[in-house]
Image (cartoon, rainbow, N blue to C red; front, side):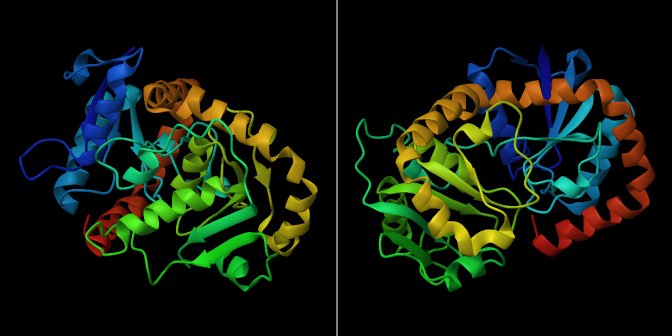
Length: 320
């Protein structure tokens, strides 16, 4: 399939925004072909949904809708996305996904334009792990259910720590940056299970990092929608947000399954989410969505009096 990548953002040098460049990088090992001319493409993908100047980027989007309406989809990694057009979303809540409008995808990761280089260098898990921790979580306090985790009385063979004051993922100049990234990976590899609670977004890149490291993920996000592909119950443990207090007992009971779940998680990552597979998985998800997308387009157009102003306000507030 021929895919054309458009960007709602404009880089300082006049080129595409970072997500468009990122996806083009991932497409280099894909079975699909990225073409520069949208008129020749079978599918047009608009990305960088949070970027550029508010008015110019929104105008760019509408120009694409007018010209490529029936083959245009969006790629949206916003933590709290606005339903502007049918496409692939990393964090669209379950309650807001309607037929023909959205498909869930993983966060594209492991290229030079992302921050967590320590994890990137650690994506081949050790052949033999002997974890001394039942489970772990190192992360920021950004709302429920993380606040519940930090208040919970955890067993001695666990590590659950609020890193809000000692690590800022978006500040690579911080004195603690490299050390905390290394501790993040080392702690995960010492663990049978890794807690993956929702934070600011319904989804988290942490989930895919743990799969890459061969650590069984524990997903704590009631409204998260799993991407198409993996047999998620075969390796992930799902815990309802109301049941967080039961986590120590639940994972103790599953303790003997850590190795099989971790290996299955890694195999699923290799098949669907490794850099050489991610672009294919993204296009496959959009291909599945495509036959019913006309209903999503009609819904999007009906919602524009609300969603377009909301998009522009979002860009003004966040500044990117």
